[in-house]
Length: 328
Ligand code: AMP
Ligand code: TRP
Image (tube, rainbow, N blue to C red; front, side, top):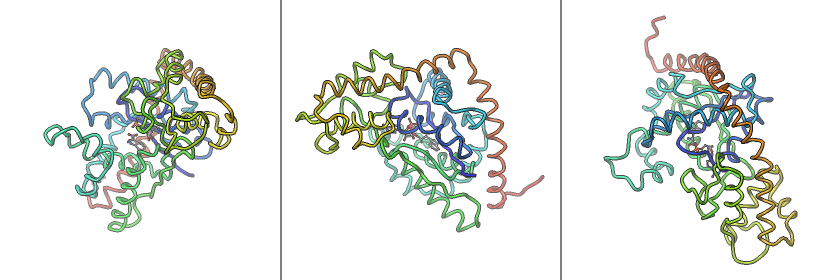
């Protein structure tokens, strides 16, 4: 059976970009494959974060996972830090990725650009090793992610080739899978930048109230001209809104374009806001309920048990392959 694995790191408020690029899609796999979805809390430590904020973000993501339609009976939902095999495999695999290739990672370059060497933690530099460990522990075949994470899955693939070449057929080759529509949602205030977790004006946060969300969409930066047309180069703002609309409606970009022929920008934005409200409204209500009930705690406990069983089998296989002496 196909194994699917993905995770989100609890570093800040989740955005509409996270929802479209990752969260929304996870449940689609749970009827056809074995799904592992985790909260990448160890990854959240790669940049300074307040302990209370980290805990709150982790609870939020657990509740968002359940609100997105993931069913804990079908999917294994867990915290990365509660399965120690992640850190153990990391300790082995760090010897099979090299400084030169890690230094070329776009995410590392972006995040460390404004820091000097005495501020950059080793964990930020070695981020892809831990991510490779996450993926490889579960023999994952498919890794659904947004576009920005493709490079990390690619380096995982390089690692698999290198490792298997040396030790035989030990690690399973994973493949990144990105959305056809919405692999990279852009900021509403600067549509040439990715919607990340850092810009309160340009990012739609899943925890924003509906009024704020509508306001952000209505004041999204648009472009010259007046046609609602997909043209990311010359009309990045309109193209981003069309992408959001299409992704949330599960239709293609050209179908979305057809719907808005002859629309003025203002009316188009209103339709986008309505669509976002239609989808996020019920989703947010479920999230609130789940958070208040605390039911996510039991899910995480059970998930950790199931994940651990599978992860430990892979860990043993790798330990044996590299020559760590088995004593049981
Ligand atoms: P992160 O918030 O960096 O842990 O990302 C979690 C998941 O959301 C990853 O699969 C990312 O690729 C995806 N993601 C984050 N931001 C965006 C965005 N603006 N558009 C599409 N996908 C995104
Ligand atoms: N690096 C991912 C991100 O920032 C989160 C993540 C950690 C992940 N480990 C993973 C995603 C394994 C997929 C598979 O978005």
